[in-house]
Amino acid sequence: MKKILHIVAGMNLGGTETYLMNIYRNINHEKVQFHFLTYYENNEYGYYDQEILQLGGEIHNLTLVKKAGPVKALIEIRQLLKTENYWAVHAHTTYNIGFSMLAAKLEGINIRIAHSHNTGVGKNSTFIKLIYQSFMRILINKFANRFCACSLKAAEHLFTSDNIEKNYTYIPNAVDLNKFLNNDCNNSKLKKEIKIPLDAKVIGHVGRYGKAKNHKFIISMFNQLLKKKKDIYLILIGEGATREDIEKQIDILGIGDNVKVLGLRTDIAELMGIMDVFILPSLYEGFGIVLLEAQSSGLPCIVSENIQPEPDMYLGLMNWVNLNDTEKWITTIEENLDKKITEKILLKKNIEQSPFQLKEVVDKFYKLYEIKGLI
Image 1: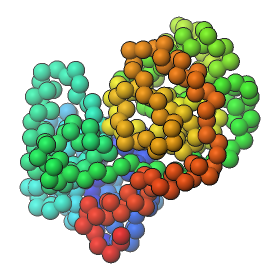
Image 2: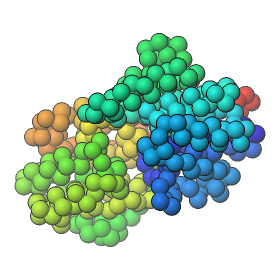
Image 3: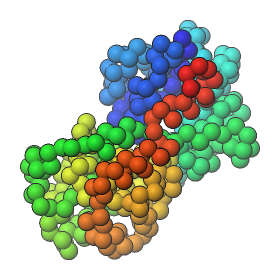
């Protein structure tokens, strides 16, 4: 059996983590096994930790780099690599990938993979952070020997043009799209549960509360839309550091009756079933895996100019709008409220022809790890 070490911040309910779990559930566990190196603090644990253990994986928690310092962080990673016979090290922690690649090189790991999932981490950084990021980028490009990303922009964010030209593999994000296609939830029951009138229009957003997802813009824009159209509701799904600030913004504007802050949910497919439009006004985004789910649900997607072109499933559902034009956001949402695709045959055909099918992406992982006989 080949053991692969995935280096992540933690295995919570985020885009990258969910993506990795989709891959992990579908690999051949008799031939390949995943371990996860995490950086939990204060007895934290991840949303997916229990499932990882049930699938036969292991979780190794080390000291957060900013607390341990670079030398101790490097030593801790090397100690882990000494105790386990890993076939490959696959790192997903943006700039901190540099430590992982150096440690893997020093411990003689032959397959060292740097995986970029974002395009904007590090923007508006302090001078010291910029120096750190530049140094990490040098380590990444010197000591990794395989480079992959979910979009070209994400690759350019971390990798040199030389490595992109010679050693880069585009690996699209993947989810179980059929789960969204075949969703047949009881819309009236779900709307009643979250206190939305049956005939009301619904805008949806799924994303972690933080700067990147731009929740302040969502609330401000929706507040203006609500002044024009009273029978419209907003669903926000997710958790994160800025949730409390956003809830305060909602309270100050007095729009709490029309904004449903649902927190983390496991019934995303069902909730997308009651939405009419999906929005993603991110300030930066490596891919936007949730857009695959939204399109598979037939939802028109109104997204910022910072969203990459790769997630487009060519269903005519993607609409890019500049964040500086709030009025354009409002009119585009209004124009798309009745354009949800409900024709399952059309959706199924596009899903089957898309590069985002799990089996295809799992095969790309096997190829990346040089594991023969499974493709």
